[in-house]
Length: 84
Image (cartoon, rainbow, N blue to C red; front, top):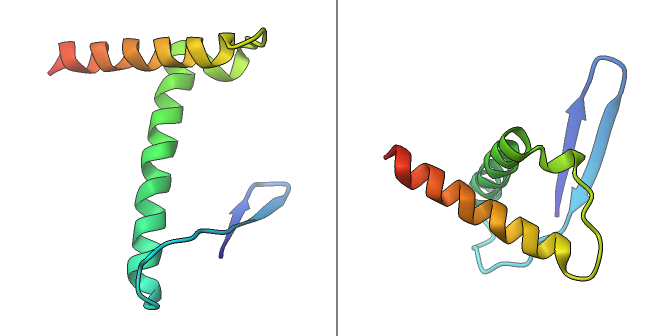
């Protein structure tokens, strides 16, 4: 179990997350793995939100949200490939 705390100017938010894994009981490798995964998720979400305004879009009929998310990821990968 991981407990996270984020502090803002006017409030503090806390959340707990449970993970199942095969990492030994040593907390350091486990913490490193969780942090690296969160960094990837946060950076991808940030790029999608800034590039495609993902948070402001509401697509909700049938499978439309999942389909649009796939198209955004494809577009993002194409942009990254073109830049390199």
